[in-house]
Image (cartoon, rainbow, N blue to C red; front, side, top):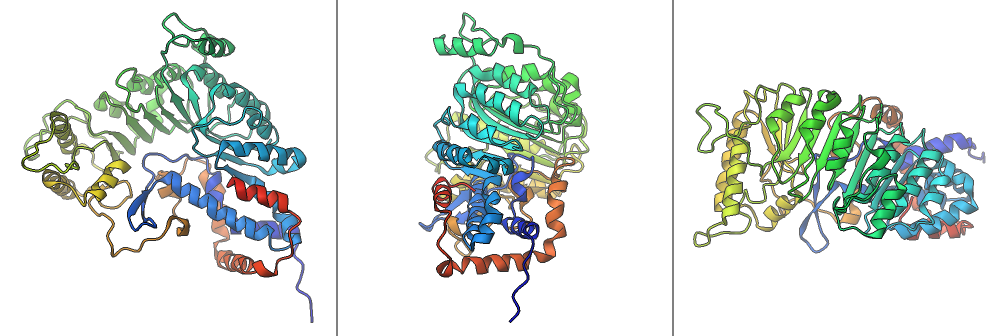
Length: 543
C-alpha cells in the first residue's frame, strides 16, 4: 500500500490559513454606527438583538475552535500551525495579559507572527507590567484594540508602540481619561502609518484639581489650570500630519481634541464619527473642523451625535462628497419652506441646496417616536416626549427627493429603540400612525426605511422565524460590509487583504471538509505535549 504524499510545510500553512478564514480581522476598518445588528433567539426563548461587537466575539470563538482543532490533530500539524494561535490575540479580560506575557517570554519568536491584539470590554485597566512587554514581543503588530480604560499607563503603551510597531501599526483603538489628551496627541504624532483611529475619552475635561491630574499633565508637557482643566502644554498647536489616516472616531468629551485637529493635515480622511454622549455642554465645533484644512471636502462618511443640535445645512454644504450621513433625529432644526404636499409636519431645513451624492441617512434617537411607554388615552405623554416627536416628524419630513436625488435608504440606528419596540410588541397607537406616515412618505419617493438590522423598520422577529442560540451562530462569508458598517472598503486596503481568499474560493469546501474530519478525530488523538499552551489559550479566550 502506497503511503500518502507528504506536503511541504508552506502548503499546509496556506491550507490552515484558508481554514481559519480570519481575513476580516486584519482589515483596517473599525465598525461604525451603520454596522448591522441581528436578531437571535436566546436560550430562554426570547428574541434578543446581537450587536456587531457581540458578532465579532462569536467570530473570534469560531476561529479559535478551528485553530485548536488543527493543532491538536497531530504533532506535525501542531508544529506547523502553532503560529496561528499567536497571529490574532483576543483577550476576554485584561488579567489574561499576564500569562500571555509569560508565554512570549518563554518563546519570544512567536510574537513575530502577531498582527492583531484585542482586549475585550472590561471596567478594569490592564496590568501595567504586562501590556507594554507584550507589545515589545510583537514587531509586526498591525491592529491594537483596547476596550478597557488605560489610565496613566497609556504613555508607556504609546512609547512602546512608537518604538516597536511604528511602521506596521495601522489601526489603534483605546479608551483614555481626558487628562491623557496631551499624550494622545503625542502618540498620534509618533505613529504616522495609522489608517484607522478610535479614541474614547472618559470623565470630564474640567475637574477638581488633584495631585494625580497635576502629575499626569506635567508628564505630558502640560499644566493644570486653576480651574482644574488639563492644559496641553507643548502638545497645543502641534502641526500634526497623518497622511494615511482614513477613519477617525471619537467618543466622549472630545471638544478640545477636535479643536486641536483643526490644524492637522489629514489628506486621506474619508470617515469621521463623533459621539458626544449625554453631554449638554462642551460640544465640539464640527463645522469648524470640516472647514479647516478642507477636512470636509473628501469625507464620504460622517456620523455626528450630540444632545445640543448642530447646523446640519452647514455640515452638508462643507461635505459635498458625503454618501452616508448620520445625525440625531431628536434635534430641533430650523423649519424650512419646502412648499406644499408634506402633510401635517412642517419639514426641517436640512440642506440649502440639493446634495447629489448622499445615498444613506442614519437617524439616532427616536426613543419617543413610537410611544413605547404604552401610553393610553387616559395617560397623556409628557411635554418632553411631545416636543421630541415634533422634532422627529419635522426631520423626517425634511428628507425629500428634490434635496437628496440619489437617496436610497433611511436607517433608524438605535438598537435600544428596536429592542423596546420588540418588547412592547410594536408601537403604541400614536406611534403606529407615525410609523405609517413615515413609511408611506419615504416609500412614495423610493426610499427604504430601515432599522439597525438592515431590515424594514417594523419587521419584528416572529415565532415562525428560525432562531438559534448565541453559541450556535456562525459567521458567514459575504457579511464583511454588514459587520463593519461600510458600503465601500477604504481605499487600497480591504481589497488587497481579501483578494487571496477570493482566488481560492473554489477550494474552501474541500478545506472545510478536512477540518470537520480533524474535529472528528478527538478520541484517536495522541496525547498532547503542548498541554500548558493549550490550557492557557482555553482559559484566556484567546486565539
